[in-house]
Length: 310
Image (tube, rainbow, N blue to C red; front, side, top):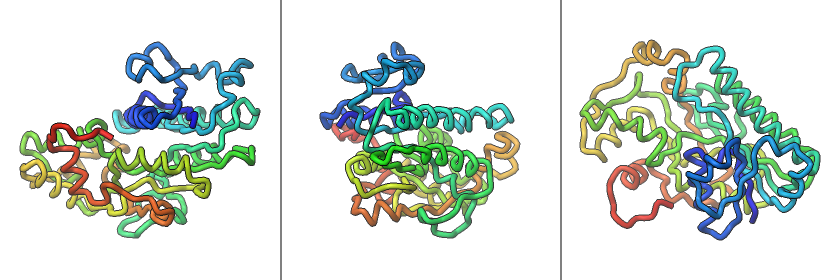
């Protein structure tokens, strides 16, 4: 399968690229800087600049693309959400998706699937309610981002291209969110954020990559899909299990007011969660390697020589 990945140089994109190449798939990465991207991705990867997507020659380069995976978008967790940053968060996702959809609708490429990233933030704060793909969007900023993001993906007008919007939870890997979350435990300062009763819908990076590959191959999967493990946990349980795996205490909670002072509106992402269930993937027969958080943390936080990355 020839897969075009937008956002291929990020944490998830790099893992997906390596996995597909190891399977013998062909990968083209859409990037603004091919020379820089070539330094971080394997030599078998092909590149096409974003600015060439609308050029007449793009049709020749992309004519045999069978699947498009769009992971592009500005980071949401590395700075305060000022008005300008919030607009960048929305625009980076909507504009990248629009460019890909336009290329599909013009016939520049005719993939069998557009798998467009989204996030569990789509649902907004939902307390203890178990959430499947049938639930409506929430009212907050992240939900607004996801609504616009997904709406753009569903503008595909080619009947041969199915559209999947993958609502991704907290992705656990050796890089990314987990590395930042466990840092306080290294200094014996670990503990839950806020009250600890909010839910974390998480997924091991291996399972998410395998899930993407599964969706690319399964013609019957379309529409919204929850990209999470089947057993979400509360923040308090996450802290307790992290402390147990690292053999560190998890007794020092970070108060809500401190998070709000330090992070502003971005603190909502940490203080309000969702209890998301991947109903479609379970119904489709997808098998999780890491359905339970303890096993995922053991795999990622304990040094085990010789174990596979993917």
